[in-house]
Amino acid sequence: MNPVSIFKCLADDTRLRSLLLIASEGELCVCELMCALDESQPKISRHLAQLRAAGLLSDERRGQWVYYSLPSDLPRWVHEVVAQTLDANQAFIQPNQQALASMQNRPAGSNCC
Image (cartoon, rainbow, N blue to C red; front, side):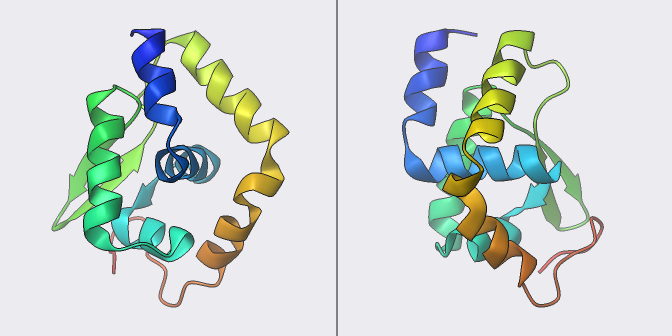
């Protein structure tokens, strides 16, 4: 993984918030990120595709839904950057976590939206 491409990818607010929320929750689907970030499905999907292309996310299809998580083979230094960023910046994503927590009919990992 090229550190320049990683940091360029994370320089966008939506992508950084998405990655930190996914790291915090373990996995999320598009509808959860739409609720947490108050953004449209096309915008969220576009940013998730960029995170996947950079190698920062993996996806798993379950039926018609796709769940995103950090890849198990992510280099240790990237895991450390994400973990330290998350630990040191809880206030940054707290409003998004609150929006996610208040989501009506939130999926339970196997069925979404």
